[in-house]
Image 1: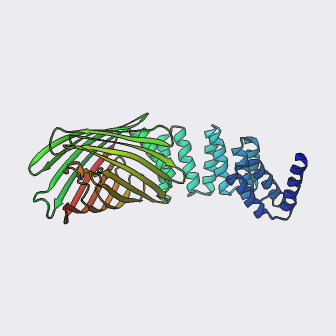
Image 2: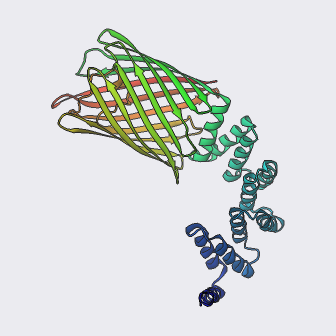
Image 3: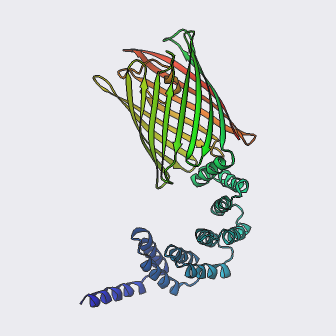
Length: 407
């Protein structure tokens, strides 16, 4: 009885397919592959569609990809070669067969197909990206970076190329030296401006980056020094974390500061974070944070909240930050709006103890640019409208300049 039902369903599906054109069958095959992960059904539908339109390149390349996902590499190659022989200028077939050879540990073959495709389509974003990825796999890092930068010149929002370029920089230039200076002006709250200078050294390791930093600050004629260490251990392609600790024996900085965040790289270029920050001036302050980030073309958006429990209330802080990438991973404009206190602001690193009952508003504009390949300059300005006594607000302006060098 079960066999009879299966045969009946199969016959009914075949009769329906007879009345469908190639495009309809192609759409059904895509749904079977992507929505249900039913690769045998997708193959069957593609075969029916190709019986009607044997030279329909989109369908045949998709069939080759389904064979690739099903580990039927010989069948996949046969489909790709069919198109290469009849339509040698068809771009997608070079992308598909390069993926097949690359995933099956044949980088030289993959590179040959990519180069042939680039002969027809020298500005192909997909082919240039694959060439950068293959060259990186073959440890030809400088050439890989060159092609990743070509992709970003065409599309500054290509997150895959930017991620690849960041990885290459970490392998080629494992060290980073960073100098920065902050100047904070108050129109009402204080008569004297605050000054803060930092120097940090970062090293990329097999487990993630580690950064050591020394901060010097001056306010009201008093000076202080703080030492910090941060690490960004990576657990997998999906998860990495931030761990930080700072100490100072002066009254300018908190005696202790610490933090932890767990990040997750999510599908469709999303990133999520959960963590906490800890500050100790004369008492403990715990701040909890969560954020969600998203890449879209050459834009990056991040929405973050900080929650700070107080004696009688819960202080809530919200911050929206965006970046407009203009070239590589280190070249962008940044914009931000926020309300409430952020313990990640360097300005608050030398502030008084956080008062959870007072409000703050801010707007940020920044610019960062690579020059002479290994150097990065950054200029940032932030305006604050802050309640420093109940019902009394004042303006603050924080200006920062930074200079980084990778080596």
